Figure 1 (cartoon, helix red, strand yellow):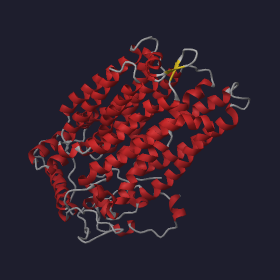
Figure 2 (cartoon, one colour):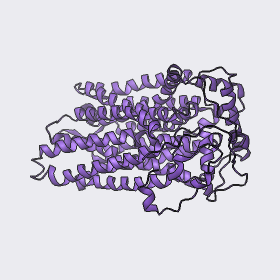
Figure 3 (cartoon, rainbow, N blue to C red):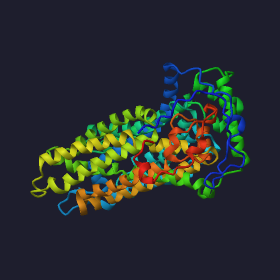
Length: 557
């Protein structure tokens, strides 16, 4: 599949969006005609590597919020197996050994996701009232409070439980505000890559969290878990300090009427003088969009569910939900069982193997997301994961324990390990980062924080459900669980094909115009912004399709 649009030389467009135009009963706010019909698109004067690297480093500090989340994920997975943690917060067997019940383990690990869901819904609004940068500093501070409560826990598991909820509130806010700020300050040609760096930081945090657990496991006191928790302070303070080098969102500044600061922010992000024509062009474009949204009045939660916006709201929620339903948490939870089949008994070593594969695969996504486009990556990622699940689950069900669970097949185990790693590669290069890219590009400014927080909340809720119930489900059906996720990926393929539009190479304002024109998702890769259209460009052809649906799915799109 090729999502790259045909090259069209810039010229003045002879078509404009009719002021009364509505597509699919949509009332999406249209851009002003003078922006849509600009005679030519002014390119950034600094597209050299050094300028783009400076922008990437700034966005990297924002993406470091993903590292904080990943660090928590990587360390908690080891805490529940640490002897001192079990002794303090677990229960005692008749023989005097300590353990965590499945229910208590599920609550301690997964309640973090509930805190994240609440934090994403409640705290994301700070980005609209106090600015993206200050809001990020606030939610990181909330995360620190949660860490303090956890470190101070002596032997009451519910105190640690409360600390997990509070730190989850902070991470939930980070998960909305970090991708939002990155998408609003990054150049359009790098936006997908830079938003994907948030997921890269998550995987780096998970990997280093695993390594830290491996390094502290041989202690016999609270060093096992308090040292990794203590390091969370360093990461949180590093992010707060790094935010001082990041420009504030120009869209937020323009919305608040701080035009001079917005101009400086655009100049800083694009590494050019504040009076450069490109900066003025971007300022005018964003200002027109902000004025349109301001004229529509303050956004409410109910607006997300009105007919003209519900399609996008449901798409964001569905993409974030399907990211969890790919089953990545299942692999990281159940992978130790598979590795034991080939003699690798140390679960900490198992975690590091998966962490390495996950991190280096996510590095590849920084190239694929803007090279192949959002749709192609999601579609092919789903196909790859389906293939991996077919082999993984089938071998696990029919071959791994063919001679009983006490005598697992080493050959079957090796095969499953191989396809588990293939699965992680397919997930990490596609669905892992692009789910965040999609929601950061899809929504108009006035409802962006609400829509993104709702979408990420669905991700956290599914994360809670999968993390909590996976131990019980795998105990009941073992590797047949893989078929459940395979079915989810089959559904995901068709959902992406029919409902997810291609936004590669478009500014956020151009994405809004594309949605307002009612372009069919499977034709969206051929859509061209008004400022780059030739005289014979036919936008109406992208709004209708008489080809039977079963032929569309297998055609090039």
